[in-house]
Length: 481
Ligand code: AMP
Ligand code: ZN
Image (cartoon, rainbow, N blue to C red; front, side, top):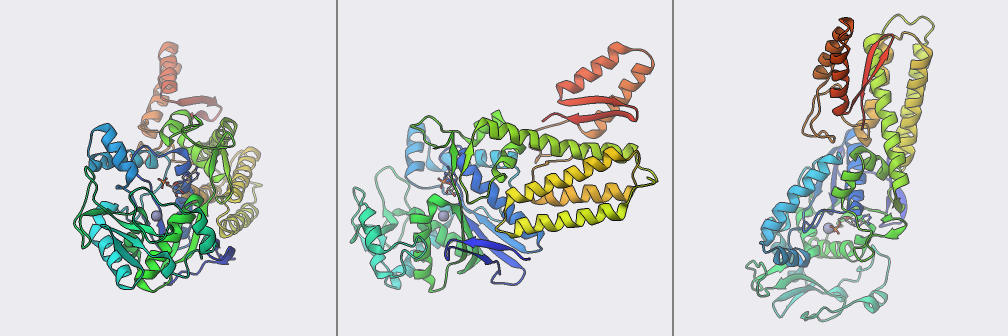
Protein backbone atom coordinates (compact mmCIF):
# COMPACT_ATOMS: atom_id res chain seq x y z
CA UNK A 1 0.00 0.00 0.00
CA UNK A 2 1.11 3.58 -0.33
CA UNK A 3 0.22 6.71 1.57
CA UNK A 4 -3.32 8.02 1.17
CA UNK A 5 -4.49 11.34 2.61
CA UNK A 6 -7.98 12.74 3.10
CA UNK A 7 -8.07 15.82 0.91
CA UNK A 8 -10.58 18.50 1.91
CA UNK A 9 -10.51 19.80 -1.64
CA UNK A 10 -12.16 16.64 -2.98
CA UNK A 11 -13.57 15.35 0.34
CA UNK A 12 -12.01 11.98 -0.36
CA UNK A 13 -9.03 9.90 0.62
CA UNK A 14 -6.57 10.03 -2.25
CA UNK A 15 -3.21 8.39 -2.95
CA UNK A 16 -0.51 10.89 -2.11
CA UNK A 17 1.62 11.69 -5.15
CA UNK A 18 3.85 14.75 -4.77
CA UNK A 19 4.39 17.17 -7.63
CA UNK A 20 8.15 16.53 -7.73
CA UNK A 21 9.28 12.94 -7.37
CA UNK A 22 10.89 12.34 -3.99
CA UNK A 23 10.14 15.82 -2.61
CA UNK A 24 7.27 17.24 -0.59
CA UNK A 25 6.38 20.89 -0.10
CA UNK A 26 4.31 21.29 3.07
CA UNK A 27 2.91 24.48 4.62
CA UNK A 28 1.17 24.55 7.98
CA UNK A 29 -0.42 27.66 9.49
CA UNK A 30 1.47 28.57 12.64
CA UNK A 31 0.63 30.51 15.79
CA UNK A 32 -0.24 34.16 16.24
CA UNK A 33 2.39 35.03 18.80
CA UNK A 34 0.42 37.33 21.11
CA UNK A 35 0.31 34.86 24.01
CA UNK A 36 1.30 31.34 25.04
CA UNK A 37 -0.29 28.85 22.68
CA UNK A 38 -3.17 26.84 24.06
CA UNK A 39 -3.58 23.09 24.25
CA UNK A 40 -5.92 23.14 21.22
CA UNK A 41 -3.22 24.82 19.12
CA UNK A 42 -0.83 22.08 20.23
CA UNK A 43 -2.90 19.54 18.31
CA UNK A 44 -2.04 20.66 14.76
CA UNK A 45 1.57 21.29 15.77
CA UNK A 46 1.88 17.70 17.02
CA UNK A 47 -0.18 15.80 14.45
CA UNK A 48 1.37 17.51 11.43
CA UNK A 49 4.82 17.04 12.96
CA UNK A 50 4.05 13.32 12.84
CA UNK A 51 2.91 13.47 9.21
CA UNK A 52 6.08 15.36 8.33
CA UNK A 53 8.22 12.77 10.14
CA UNK A 54 6.39 9.94 8.38
CA UNK A 55 6.97 11.52 4.96
CA UNK A 56 10.66 11.80 5.87
CA UNK A 57 10.66 8.19 7.01
CA UNK A 58 9.23 7.21 3.59
CA UNK A 59 12.31 8.84 2.06
CA UNK A 60 10.86 12.14 0.86
CA UNK A 61 12.88 15.32 1.13
CA UNK A 62 10.31 17.43 2.98
CA UNK A 63 10.39 21.21 3.09
CA UNK A 64 8.12 22.04 5.99
CA UNK A 65 7.16 25.68 6.48
CA UNK A 66 5.25 26.93 9.51
CA UNK A 67 4.83 30.67 9.89
CA UNK A 68 4.62 32.99 12.85
CA UNK A 69 1.82 35.57 12.55
CA UNK A 70 3.54 38.50 14.24
CA UNK A 71 1.25 41.34 13.19
CA UNK A 72 -2.54 41.49 13.55
CA UNK A 73 -5.20 43.09 15.77
CA UNK A 74 -4.56 40.71 18.66
CA UNK A 75 -0.83 41.46 18.57
CA UNK A 76 -1.46 45.19 18.55
CA UNK A 77 -3.98 45.12 21.44
CA UNK A 78 -1.83 42.90 23.62
CA UNK A 79 1.31 44.98 23.02
CA UNK A 80 -0.63 48.14 23.99
CA UNK A 81 -1.92 46.45 27.12
CA UNK A 82 1.55 45.35 28.15
CA UNK A 83 3.10 48.69 27.26
CA UNK A 84 5.60 47.12 24.87
CA UNK A 85 6.09 47.23 21.11
CA UNK A 86 4.60 44.65 18.76
CA UNK A 87 8.10 43.31 17.82
CA UNK A 88 8.96 42.96 21.53
CA UNK A 89 5.75 41.00 22.10
CA UNK A 90 6.48 38.78 19.10
CA UNK A 91 10.04 38.11 20.22
CA UNK A 92 8.81 37.09 23.66
CA UNK A 93 6.10 34.69 22.50
CA UNK A 94 8.16 33.18 19.67
CA UNK A 95 10.69 32.23 22.35
CA UNK A 96 7.89 30.83 24.54
CA UNK A 97 6.42 28.94 21.56
CA UNK A 98 9.81 27.32 20.97
CA UNK A 99 10.14 26.20 24.61
CA UNK A 100 6.75 24.45 24.54
CA UNK A 101 7.33 23.01 21.07
CA UNK A 102 10.65 21.48 22.17
CA UNK A 103 9.01 20.07 25.30
CA UNK A 104 6.31 18.46 23.14
CA UNK A 105 8.93 16.88 20.87
CA UNK A 106 7.89 18.96 17.84
CA UNK A 107 10.74 19.17 15.33
CA UNK A 108 11.74 22.60 14.06
CA UNK A 109 10.20 23.45 10.70
CA UNK A 110 12.60 23.75 7.76
CA UNK A 111 11.63 27.43 7.66
CA UNK A 112 9.66 29.43 10.27
CA UNK A 113 9.01 32.73 8.48
CA UNK A 114 7.53 35.78 10.18
CA UNK A 115 4.99 37.96 8.41
CA UNK A 116 6.76 41.23 9.26
CA UNK A 117 9.97 39.99 7.67
CA UNK A 118 8.14 39.45 4.35
CA UNK A 119 6.48 42.80 3.70
CA UNK A 120 8.09 43.21 0.21
CA UNK A 121 6.86 39.73 -0.82
CA UNK A 122 3.40 40.48 0.56
CA UNK A 123 3.23 43.80 -1.32
CA UNK A 124 4.37 42.11 -4.55
CA UNK A 125 1.67 39.44 -4.20
CA UNK A 126 -1.03 42.07 -3.61
CA UNK A 127 0.20 44.04 -6.62
CA UNK A 128 -0.09 40.94 -8.84
CA UNK A 129 -3.67 40.37 -7.67
CA UNK A 130 -4.55 44.01 -8.44
CA UNK A 131 -2.85 43.77 -11.85
CA UNK A 132 -4.83 40.64 -12.64
CA UNK A 133 -8.07 42.46 -11.85
CA UNK A 134 -9.03 40.72 -8.61
CA UNK A 135 -8.33 43.36 -5.98
CA UNK A 136 -8.94 47.10 -5.61
CA UNK A 137 -7.73 49.94 -3.46
CA UNK A 138 -10.28 51.79 -1.39
CA UNK A 139 -9.58 54.48 1.18
CA UNK A 140 -5.98 53.35 1.80
CA UNK A 141 -7.01 49.68 2.17
CA UNK A 142 -6.77 47.01 -0.52
CA UNK A 143 -9.52 44.39 -0.78
CA UNK A 144 -9.83 41.14 -2.65
CA UNK A 145 -12.77 41.37 -5.06
CA UNK A 146 -14.54 38.11 -4.28
CA UNK A 147 -17.23 38.52 -6.96
CA UNK A 148 -14.47 38.67 -9.59
CA UNK A 149 -13.34 35.20 -8.58
CA UNK A 150 -16.00 32.65 -9.54
CA UNK A 151 -14.12 29.76 -7.90
CA UNK A 152 -14.47 31.36 -4.45
CA UNK A 153 -16.08 28.79 -2.11
CA UNK A 154 -14.52 25.76 -3.82
CA UNK A 155 -12.64 24.63 -0.70
CA UNK A 156 -15.42 25.21 1.82
CA UNK A 157 -18.06 23.97 -0.66
CA UNK A 158 -20.40 26.92 -0.27
CA UNK A 159 -21.83 29.25 -2.85
CA UNK A 160 -21.30 32.99 -2.83
CA UNK A 161 -24.86 33.87 -1.89
CA UNK A 162 -24.84 31.64 1.19
CA UNK A 163 -21.47 33.04 2.19
CA UNK A 164 -22.71 36.58 1.60
CA UNK A 165 -25.50 36.03 4.14
CA UNK A 166 -22.93 35.41 6.87
CA UNK A 167 -20.45 38.12 5.85
CA UNK A 168 -19.82 41.22 7.99
CA UNK A 169 -18.39 44.64 7.40
CA UNK A 170 -16.14 45.79 10.24
CA UNK A 171 -16.27 49.44 11.32
CA UNK A 172 -13.92 51.51 9.17
CA UNK A 173 -13.92 49.07 6.25
CA UNK A 174 -14.71 50.57 2.88
CA UNK A 175 -15.27 47.57 0.69
CA UNK A 176 -17.49 47.12 -2.35
CA UNK A 177 -19.07 43.89 -1.14
CA UNK A 178 -19.38 42.38 2.36
CA UNK A 179 -17.59 39.23 1.11
CA UNK A 180 -14.46 41.14 0.12
CA UNK A 181 -11.56 40.84 2.55
CA UNK A 182 -8.58 43.05 3.30
CA UNK A 183 -5.21 42.33 1.74
CA UNK A 184 -3.74 45.59 3.04
CA UNK A 185 -5.02 47.79 5.87
CA UNK A 186 -4.31 51.54 5.78
CA UNK A 187 -2.38 52.96 8.74
CA UNK A 188 -4.23 53.77 11.96
CA UNK A 189 -2.70 56.00 14.64
CA UNK A 190 -0.45 54.14 17.05
CA UNK A 191 -0.26 50.99 14.91
CA UNK A 192 2.83 49.59 13.17
CA UNK A 193 2.88 50.49 9.48
CA UNK A 194 5.04 49.99 6.40
CA UNK A 195 5.28 51.96 3.15
CA UNK A 196 3.39 50.56 0.19
CA UNK A 197 2.11 51.70 -3.23
CA UNK A 198 -1.26 52.30 -1.51
CA UNK A 199 0.15 54.39 1.33
CA UNK A 200 1.41 53.31 4.72
CA UNK A 201 -0.30 50.36 6.35
CA UNK A 202 0.02 46.70 7.28
CA UNK A 203 -0.87 43.38 5.67
CA UNK A 204 -4.15 41.56 6.28
CA UNK A 205 -3.83 38.16 7.93
CA UNK A 206 -4.57 35.82 5.00
CA UNK A 207 -2.11 37.30 2.52
CA UNK A 208 0.96 36.46 4.61
CA UNK A 209 0.45 32.71 4.12
CA UNK A 210 0.02 33.12 0.34
CA UNK A 211 3.16 35.25 0.07
CA UNK A 212 5.36 33.17 2.36
CA UNK A 213 4.29 29.77 1.03
CA UNK A 214 5.08 30.77 -2.56
CA UNK A 215 8.42 32.26 -1.52
CA UNK A 216 9.62 29.08 0.19
CA UNK A 217 7.65 26.36 -1.56
CA UNK A 218 6.75 27.64 -5.03
CA UNK A 219 3.42 28.57 -6.58
CA UNK A 220 1.86 25.11 -6.25
CA UNK A 221 2.47 23.22 -3.03
CA UNK A 222 1.77 19.62 -2.14
CA UNK A 223 0.27 19.82 1.35
CA UNK A 224 -1.29 22.66 3.34
CA UNK A 225 -2.63 22.04 6.81
CA UNK A 226 -4.24 23.72 9.80
CA UNK A 227 -7.13 23.35 12.21
CA UNK A 228 -10.63 22.92 10.80
CA UNK A 229 -11.55 26.44 11.97
CA UNK A 230 -9.13 27.79 9.36
CA UNK A 231 -10.91 26.13 6.43
CA UNK A 232 -13.15 29.15 6.09
CA UNK A 233 -12.34 31.98 5.67
CA UNK A 234 -8.55 31.75 6.08
CA UNK A 235 -7.79 28.90 3.71
CA UNK A 236 -10.54 29.77 1.24
CA UNK A 237 -9.00 33.26 1.07
CA UNK A 238 -5.48 31.91 0.69
CA UNK A 239 -6.61 29.84 -2.33
CA UNK A 240 -8.32 32.83 -3.93
CA UNK A 241 -5.34 35.15 -3.38
CA UNK A 242 -2.67 32.70 -4.50
CA UNK A 243 -4.52 31.51 -7.58
CA UNK A 244 -5.56 35.06 -8.53
CA UNK A 245 -1.89 36.10 -8.25
CA UNK A 246 -0.28 33.18 -10.08
CA UNK A 247 -2.96 31.58 -12.23
CA UNK A 248 -1.75 28.19 -10.95
CA UNK A 249 -3.41 25.71 -8.57
CA UNK A 250 -2.29 26.65 -5.06
CA UNK A 251 -2.52 23.46 -2.99
CA UNK A 252 -2.86 19.83 -4.03
CA UNK A 253 -3.81 18.28 -0.65
CA UNK A 254 -5.67 20.28 2.01
CA UNK A 255 -5.59 18.70 5.48
CA UNK A 256 -7.48 19.89 8.54
CA UNK A 257 -7.33 18.59 12.09
CA UNK A 258 -10.46 18.30 14.22
CA UNK A 259 -10.95 20.40 17.33
CA UNK A 260 -9.68 19.68 20.79
CA UNK A 261 -12.42 20.06 23.40
CA UNK A 262 -12.04 20.41 27.14
CA UNK A 263 -14.52 18.45 29.22
CA UNK A 264 -16.51 18.01 26.00
CA UNK A 265 -16.88 21.74 25.45
CA UNK A 266 -15.26 24.16 23.10
CA UNK A 267 -12.38 25.82 24.89
CA UNK A 268 -12.99 29.45 25.66
CA UNK A 269 -11.77 32.02 28.11
CA UNK A 270 -15.34 32.96 29.02
CA UNK A 271 -16.24 29.37 29.95
CA UNK A 272 -13.14 29.23 32.15
CA UNK A 273 -11.97 25.99 30.52
CA UNK A 274 -9.04 27.57 28.73
CA UNK A 275 -5.69 25.82 29.12
CA UNK A 276 -2.33 26.86 27.72
CA UNK A 277 0.11 24.19 26.59
CA UNK A 278 2.47 25.62 29.22
CA UNK A 279 0.06 24.89 32.06
CA UNK A 280 -0.79 21.47 30.64
CA UNK A 281 2.97 20.76 30.62
CA UNK A 282 3.12 21.69 34.29
CA UNK A 283 0.36 19.17 35.05
CA UNK A 284 1.20 16.25 32.79
CA UNK A 285 4.38 14.65 31.40
CA UNK A 286 5.13 16.07 27.94
CA UNK A 287 5.25 12.63 26.34
CA UNK A 288 1.81 11.84 27.79
CA UNK A 289 0.37 14.97 26.17
CA UNK A 290 1.95 14.00 22.87
CA UNK A 291 0.71 10.41 23.04
CA UNK A 292 -2.74 11.64 24.03
CA UNK A 293 -2.91 13.83 20.90
CA UNK A 294 -1.98 10.86 18.73
CA UNK A 295 -4.46 8.52 20.36
CA UNK A 296 -7.36 9.77 18.22
CA UNK A 297 -7.53 10.17 14.46
CA UNK A 298 -6.37 13.70 13.62
CA UNK A 299 -9.64 14.58 11.87
CA UNK A 300 -11.88 13.52 14.79
CA UNK A 301 -12.58 15.77 17.73
CA UNK A 302 -10.59 14.89 20.85
CA UNK A 303 -11.62 15.53 24.43
CA UNK A 304 -8.89 16.72 26.80
CA UNK A 305 -9.82 15.34 30.22
CA UNK A 306 -7.75 14.13 33.20
CA UNK A 307 -8.62 10.42 32.73
CA UNK A 308 -7.38 10.48 29.13
CA UNK A 309 -4.14 12.12 30.19
CA UNK A 310 -3.62 9.68 33.05
CA UNK A 311 -4.13 6.76 30.68
CA UNK A 312 -1.68 8.35 28.26
CA UNK A 313 0.90 8.73 31.06
CA UNK A 314 0.50 5.05 31.94
CA UNK A 315 0.92 4.14 28.27
CA UNK A 316 4.13 6.17 28.03
CA UNK A 317 5.46 4.49 31.18
CA UNK A 318 4.75 1.06 29.64
CA UNK A 319 6.66 2.02 26.49
CA UNK A 320 9.63 3.43 28.40
CA UNK A 321 9.75 0.44 30.74
CA UNK A 322 9.80 -1.92 27.80
CA UNK A 323 12.80 -0.11 26.38
CA UNK A 324 14.67 0.05 29.67
CA UNK A 325 13.94 -3.64 30.39
CA UNK A 326 15.28 -4.43 26.95
CA UNK A 327 18.45 -2.40 27.59
CA UNK A 328 18.95 -4.02 30.96
CA UNK A 329 18.46 -7.51 29.56
CA UNK A 330 20.81 -6.76 26.66
CA UNK A 331 23.53 -5.91 29.18
CA UNK A 332 22.89 -8.81 31.51
CA UNK A 333 21.12 -11.59 29.66
CA UNK A 334 22.73 -11.82 26.23
CA UNK A 335 23.66 -15.43 25.61
CA UNK A 336 23.31 -18.44 23.33
CA UNK A 337 19.56 -18.71 24.09
CA UNK A 338 18.91 -22.34 23.30
CA UNK A 339 15.26 -22.85 22.38
CA UNK A 340 14.68 -19.29 21.17
CA UNK A 341 13.42 -19.12 17.60
CA UNK A 342 14.92 -15.93 16.18
CA UNK A 343 13.45 -16.50 12.71
CA UNK A 344 9.92 -16.72 14.14
CA UNK A 345 10.47 -13.59 16.21
CA UNK A 346 11.79 -11.67 13.18
CA UNK A 347 8.83 -12.82 11.10
CA UNK A 348 6.42 -11.47 13.72
CA UNK A 349 8.24 -8.13 13.77
CA UNK A 350 8.08 -7.96 9.98
CA UNK A 351 4.29 -8.39 10.10
CA UNK A 352 4.00 -5.71 12.79
CA UNK A 353 6.18 -3.37 10.76
CA UNK A 354 3.84 -3.85 7.79
CA UNK A 355 0.83 -3.21 10.07
CA UNK A 356 2.43 -0.02 11.35
CA UNK A 357 3.02 1.26 7.82
CA UNK A 358 -0.50 0.24 6.77
CA UNK A 359 -1.94 2.30 9.65
CA UNK A 360 0.17 5.33 8.80
CA UNK A 361 -0.55 4.95 5.07
CA UNK A 362 -4.26 5.14 5.85
CA UNK A 363 -4.51 8.93 6.21
CA UNK A 364 -1.82 8.70 8.94
CA UNK A 365 -3.99 6.91 11.41
CA UNK A 366 -1.80 7.47 14.47
CA UNK A 367 -4.32 5.80 16.79
CA UNK A 368 -3.99 2.52 14.89
CA UNK A 369 -0.21 2.98 14.60
CA UNK A 370 0.03 3.37 18.39
CA UNK A 371 -1.96 0.15 18.72
CA UNK A 372 0.67 -1.63 16.62
CA UNK A 373 3.47 -0.15 18.73
CA UNK A 374 1.81 -1.70 21.79
CA UNK A 375 1.70 -5.06 20.02
CA UNK A 376 5.46 -4.73 19.45
CA UNK A 377 5.86 -3.99 23.17
CA UNK A 378 3.76 -7.01 24.09
CA UNK A 379 5.85 -9.26 21.86
CA UNK A 380 9.10 -7.95 23.37
CA UNK A 381 7.83 -8.21 26.96
CA UNK A 382 6.62 -11.80 26.57
CA UNK A 383 9.86 -12.83 24.85
CA UNK A 384 11.91 -11.29 27.68
CA UNK A 385 9.75 -13.08 30.22
CA UNK A 386 9.92 -16.48 28.53
CA UNK A 387 13.68 -16.66 28.03
CA UNK A 388 16.52 -16.58 30.52
CA UNK A 389 19.05 -15.52 27.87
CA UNK A 390 18.56 -14.17 24.36
CA UNK A 391 20.88 -13.68 21.39
CA UNK A 392 22.40 -10.32 20.55
CA UNK A 393 20.42 -10.31 17.30
CA UNK A 394 17.15 -10.41 19.23
CA UNK A 395 18.10 -7.26 21.14
CA UNK A 396 19.17 -5.51 17.97
CA UNK A 397 15.91 -6.27 16.16
CA UNK A 398 13.66 -5.52 19.13
CA UNK A 399 15.34 -2.18 19.77
CA UNK A 400 15.26 -1.37 16.05
CA UNK A 401 11.48 -2.01 15.93
CA UNK A 402 10.84 0.37 18.85
CA UNK A 403 13.13 2.98 17.34
CA UNK A 404 11.46 2.86 13.93
CA UNK A 405 7.99 3.47 15.37
CA UNK A 406 9.27 6.13 17.70
CA UNK A 407 11.22 8.06 15.09
CA UNK A 408 7.76 8.87 13.69
CA UNK A 409 5.50 9.07 16.73
CA UNK A 410 8.05 10.46 19.22
CA UNK A 411 6.24 9.10 22.29
CA UNK A 412 9.00 7.06 23.96
CA UNK A 413 11.35 10.00 24.26
CA UNK A 414 15.08 10.12 24.70
CA UNK A 415 16.85 6.95 25.72
CA UNK A 416 17.68 6.64 29.40
CA UNK A 417 21.14 5.71 28.21
CA UNK A 418 21.70 9.21 26.90
CA UNK A 419 22.80 12.10 28.99
CA UNK A 420 20.64 15.20 29.09
CA UNK A 421 20.30 17.04 25.82
CA UNK A 422 18.60 20.32 24.97
CA UNK A 423 15.77 18.36 23.29
CA UNK A 424 15.15 16.36 26.40
CA UNK A 425 11.50 16.91 27.34
CA UNK A 426 12.26 16.06 30.95
CA UNK A 427 14.79 18.86 31.32
CA UNK A 428 18.29 18.25 32.64
CA UNK A 429 18.91 14.70 33.85
CA UNK A 430 21.66 12.53 35.23
CA UNK A 431 23.45 10.65 32.47
CA UNK A 432 23.59 6.88 32.42
CA UNK A 433 27.31 7.00 33.33
CA UNK A 434 26.55 9.10 36.39
CA UNK A 435 23.70 6.82 37.43
CA UNK A 436 25.70 3.66 36.95
CA UNK A 437 28.66 5.06 38.85
CA UNK A 438 26.32 5.72 41.80
CA UNK A 439 24.81 2.24 41.51
CA UNK A 440 28.32 0.73 41.63
CA UNK A 441 29.20 2.86 44.61
CA UNK A 442 26.01 1.67 46.29
CA UNK A 443 26.86 -1.99 45.58
CA UNK A 444 30.33 -1.45 47.10
CA UNK A 445 28.78 0.24 50.15
CA UNK A 446 26.38 -2.66 50.63
CA UNK A 447 29.21 -5.15 50.36
CA UNK A 448 31.06 -3.20 53.04
CA UNK A 449 27.81 -3.22 55.09
CA UNK A 450 27.73 0.58 54.95
CA UNK A 451 23.91 0.66 54.70
CA UNK A 452 23.69 4.32 55.61
CA UNK A 453 25.69 5.20 52.47
CA UNK A 454 23.81 2.74 50.27
CA UNK A 455 20.44 4.15 51.42
CA UNK A 456 21.72 7.65 50.90
CA UNK A 457 22.57 6.84 47.27
CA UNK A 458 19.17 5.26 46.70
CA UNK A 459 17.50 8.40 48.09
CA UNK A 460 19.72 10.67 46.07
CA UNK A 461 18.74 8.83 42.88
CA UNK A 462 15.08 8.77 43.90
CA UNK A 463 15.17 12.55 44.26
CA UNK A 464 16.32 12.68 40.62
CA UNK A 465 13.43 10.43 39.56
CA UNK A 466 15.57 7.27 39.26
CA UNK A 467 14.10 4.14 40.83
CA UNK A 468 16.23 1.10 41.62
CA UNK A 469 15.20 -2.53 41.63
CA UNK A 470 17.58 -5.22 42.88
CA UNK A 471 17.37 -8.41 40.80
CA UNK A 472 19.48 -11.60 40.74
CA UNK A 473 21.22 -10.20 37.65
CA UNK A 474 22.08 -6.93 39.36
CA UNK A 475 20.46 -3.59 40.05
CA UNK A 476 17.99 -2.38 37.43
CA UNK A 477 17.12 1.29 37.21
CA UNK A 478 14.47 3.28 35.48
CA UNK A 479 13.29 6.84 35.36
CA UNK A 480 9.94 7.80 36.76
CA UNK A 481 8.18 10.11 34.31
P1 AMP B 1 -4.18 30.37 15.78
O1 AMP B 1 -2.94 30.82 16.51
O2 AMP B 1 -5.44 30.69 16.49
O3 AMP B 1 -4.18 30.80 14.34
O4 AMP B 1 -4.17 28.76 15.77
C1 AMP B 1 -3.04 27.97 15.43
C2 AMP B 1 -3.53 26.62 14.98
O5 AMP B 1 -4.30 25.96 16.02
C3 AMP B 1 -4.46 26.66 13.78
O6 AMP B 1 -4.13 25.60 12.91
C4 AMP B 1 -5.85 26.47 14.39
O7 AMP B 1 -6.74 25.93 13.46
C5 AMP B 1 -5.55 25.47 15.48
N1 AMP B 1 -6.54 25.42 16.58
C6 AMP B 1 -7.05 26.46 17.26
N2 AMP B 1 -7.91 26.06 18.26
C7 AMP B 1 -7.92 24.69 18.19
C8 AMP B 1 -8.59 23.66 18.95
N3 AMP B 1 -9.38 23.93 20.00
N4 AMP B 1 -8.38 22.36 18.58
C9 AMP B 1 -7.57 22.06 17.56
N5 AMP B 1 -6.90 22.98 16.80
C10 AMP B 1 -7.06 24.28 17.11
ZN1 ZN C 1 -2.31 30.52 7.20
